[in-house]
Amino acid sequence: MNLAPASSPDIAINVEGLSKSFGGREVVHDLSMQVKRGSIYGFLGPNGSGKTTTIRMLCGLLTPDSGEGTCLGYDIRRDADKIKRQVGYMTQRFSLYQDLSVRENLEFVARLYGMPDARGAARDMIQRIGLNGREEQLAGELSGGWKQRLALGACTLPNPQLLLLDEPTAGVDPKARRDFWNEIHALAAEGLTVLVSTHYMDEAERCHEIAYIAYGHLLAHGTVDEVIAKSALSTWTVSGDDLNGLAAELAGKPGVDMVAPFGTSLHVSGRDKAALEATIAPYRDTRGWHWQDSEPSLEDVFIDLMNRSKDNFQ
Image (cartoon, rainbow, N blue to C red; front, side, top):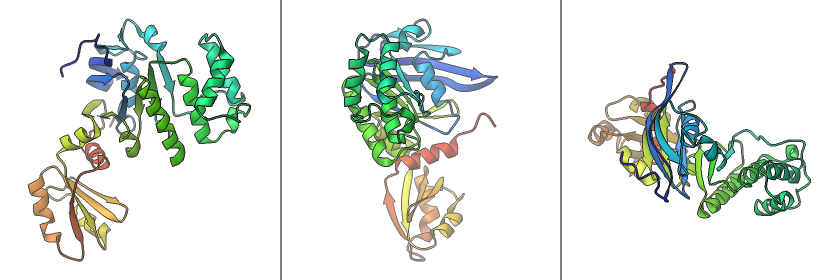
């Protein structure tokens, strides 16, 4: 992988050969990556596959066993403290004080970071994140979506250059998720770099670039279109009766790498196009099934990569 110079103003994160082990098991293996400034970079992969460890190493929160690189122009090994001052971190679990009000939480964060006008900073953030009228409501009484807005406001209050989001919208309703992502894109447009781990395909598609990490190995990265194209998957969408029976018949046959239901249809995919088409030929135009040659979805690629990944903890 040809990495740009560490001093490049357009590159927020530039790392090469990062590896990390815990208890004798390698969690991340020889990972190299670049993240552009002002971009939203999404991390996908199975639970326990090293996404969070990777994100923490990228920004100096965790020291790699081997490898090197820079984050925000600082060395990830020597300048970890300097990097941390520029990073906002939002975890899946709500981590603010439940028995403090919205205003009190934000003022506390502002004072913690030594901001000169804590009240003014909190007031401006309340306006930005749309919590007007809820200033005195206890954080513990907010709904999931409002808690999410407050947490985002708190971790961006000190104006970080890099924002880390660890599955930030788990358990949040679709409208709140969309509002959240609209705000993330607005922040990125202002120059904030965002690293986010997610299991939601629609969220991954809203990232500028994505990386798929499985059990410590970086298997795919690039824009969504690039990742789909590189998968070399051929996909057929099937509609009709008894799709469960069809899925059972096709599973494991030559050329069929994945069979997955999608609503009232079935996706049948494989990397060997000729073998796949030979296998499905007898099923075309029979039993009332309708077959349509389709573009693979990001979810098709995600499932295929999962099926091919080996759990290094088994």
